[in-house]
Length: 306
Length: 329
View 1 (cartoon, one colour):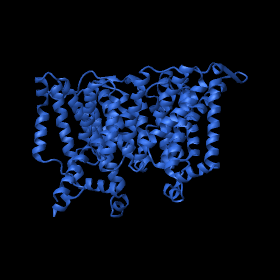
View 2 (cartoon, each protein chain N blue to C red; view 1 turned 90 degrees about the vertical axis):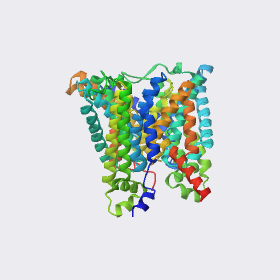
View 3 (cartoon, helix red, strand yellow; view 1 turned 180 degrees about the horizontal axis):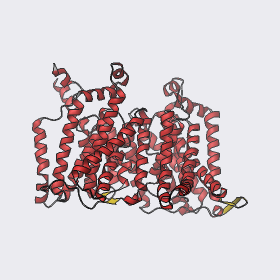
């Protein structure tokens, strides 16, 4: 096993983990403050990716596409919150699951009606399409480096926002004890519309950045949604720090085990068994990780309440 | 003495004998009517509804009556289906062997998953059951010997007895009908038994039930295993109906669909699973015959159910009865 491959895969894992964080950050706040299970969070990611692809096709500018996707999805998210999701906060989890599952169906079909069944192309911006030599012999795609730096910047921004600003204080107060925060005069309702819009914008950022790497297609939100849920459960619901640690953990474990496990298995078993079993074991590993975390730390690694 | 208990909220009497027998007679006659009208296709639809009624009712036992929101129930359905598929692949086609074994395999998995998951509560229980279901999903995807991602086609349907040919859709339908009647009858007895009372008690107030000496964990675990076994039966039947078992049977959206059936039918209502399965599948069938974009319509209907009928279809009936009682009383 050479170190170049491992470093490359670790960087890929970091990149995937940071994108997961963009989704998980919004999801964990929605979950933590309003105790609301939002299955439609992945749909916001999909809507963001489609908006970006559409604007990129029309204008040819990737930066413009990302900005348009951010603004459009934030607006869409806030609209959704005000018209519909707000009615669900007081309901039990079952009603929330059913309603947001219905939203997934509606969003998927809506996207299909507007943009059709075929996946959309979102191209890597030309300036970033080549590789960069990080270390002698270690080439890494420039575009993925951009994703990593954007992800790190957003994580830093969120950290400052949540721990150093007044709005962040309100959010933390809301997550740790909603009633108390309301009593202290925080307008939770308006705060929440804001948080939801912000979470939607983060989804759109992840969707438009990952668009050129993964396919922009109907149903892209569902597979990543489950991973985002795994992340926030591992990290502790309502905790931004937990979401960051959880995302990096899931991103790294998932990506690294996909490459390393088959190679390790090949040492102990026949190559056929290894190539069959490896990917499955790698997919299972993050769920084993989650079950183990829940078993020993039922509130997640960084519980927000209490 | 027994009157107050029979009237309590924990007792589920079900519809009267007359209604039951009429519905049963209609269901028994359905294949004849369908054949007479040249609508054989609908025998398959009815069979699917009944199978999902078993699966949804088994979920309703833990979700509705036990208050355990399991988001991984499709795993047990899938395990049952794969048991039948793999046994048939190995040359064992007898339903008398493969169907009970399917239930046993699913019950075994449920026993294991339940023993770990039931230590958690609330959202964490939802997520840990989902995690286990995902593990099983990826395990069957990796079973290249049994089709992997593409699934495993069955060579035929299970063999049951010389007079009954399951390859005949009507015969298969009747067998499924008999089994679903048996399951529904069993579940009714079960929720009205002392076990069922205890289970519903733990849903209402866990701490109080523990204080009066109920072994809460054991009760919940038993219900979880029972639900797993019944879901395995549904899976065995589904494998026979589809003639194919695929990992998709265990996908989390399938667990979501079962949950939605229970919710729209009425969680914790005796016939909730049946009503929900019938409601959702028939709605899908109807909508998809009218428009290509039926998912949109289905989504809108589901949203309407959440906003305007919070207790599901069974709740609508109950609400009307209560309204009538307030008017007359």
